[in-house]
Length: 573
Image 1 (tube, rainbow, N blue to C red):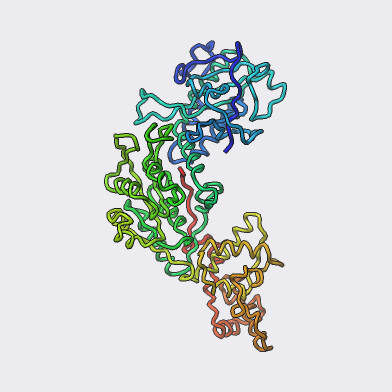
Image 2 (image 1 turned 180 degrees about the vertical axis):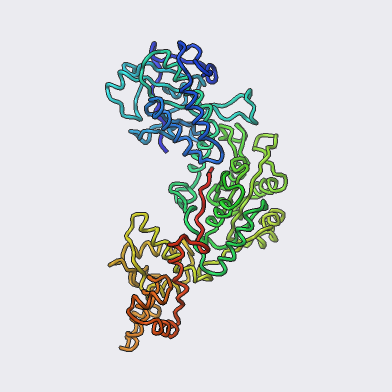
């Protein structure tokens, strides 16, 4: 997250307070007080901006598109959004259409032009940057010519009105800033009014971004990237399911996606609970609404109830600003709660109330707000035992357990190991890693026999290690991590006879040909310059199942039944 550049404070005669936020604006043709300048091009831009906003669109992408539109359509330079951090009491840059010069520079409310606008809620116009002693120009590079010719505009961004009441008092949560060429005072007034209208349009998206920034800061630094949001989670990747048990689970998930009842995903860590939750959301009628993800174990237990319910300003020490909770953020969408067994009694009671009454009240408040949320919970713990011991709410468990899906560990669905391995190697190559042509027969045997206590993440880590260390684009048993290699499974600790070595080599050639042919024995026979009858005989003799290699053909053809690419979805967390 990039910090705010407080662009200095106004000097005498250079920076003048503009109309308060919400005062003045664009009508159908002209701007009041702007010399009759035509406002229609600006209205067209506002219309385009409004079309790009909405709960069905990713909020960060919407905001980034707005900043780009300011530059492309009206010549604004270095448009950037600054948001307040209630936890630190500082103002920081959150989005910009130009790469900043400095990454870490904190400013306090009241400091500089941006701090003044945040404190007073009144827009400010700096007519000339040059010779302004407190105009620091820390964040962006500006040439001497630009300092002579450019102006600086800063308008407040207000929090969304509570309950939709336009007359309710609204807090300032940040500022929308931009450089602009100086033409005339009238032109600057027009641009100021336009920015104020744009700031009003982005109120909801800016509030969501502020909440997301706060959530990321509260997560531990050693959390996996799919929870932190540092890298895109693999939600759009195919869900590999070659085994019968996983195909059955996907059928159940597809059926559950059409309903509204809570879903409980059971299974060990790393079996793919979040991927399945994403698949359920993407196949549901709520697919165009937010999918909010929360890893309950990553949030300090004492803060979890506040994270879920939200809170009003002053509800507890440190509550410097009213904040929506995850329940409200997921309104009309889906809330995925991983490690739900980590919830304390207060958070469990809040979740139970949501499921029973479909409403939520913020900490420190008395009014209840409607919250239409589909809850998908995940747990690797024995919730039944926890409920019997009183460690988990029995009522909540009964509500969540209406539709329960158990995802077996990888060692119990070994048919998925090779398809998963091939899929991960393709992704490794797409991310810029070394391409791998094939996996040798001994390496495949090691992968298939291993216990995989870490499930899919351990398999991915293992293959990434092997892809980095292999030669000739072939993964051999020696390229795999030591934990997978034993004398018994790799045959490295035994002296093979000539006959045993021939059998070993023959099996490896057969498997390699079948992998390349996608399990088609006729194609494999042609590649080996042999007959179908001989290949069929050898396959049966060595107990090789050609169907386990058929995943490659299906994956390359679009993945029909065994893979399911997830459609894109709006995300609020």
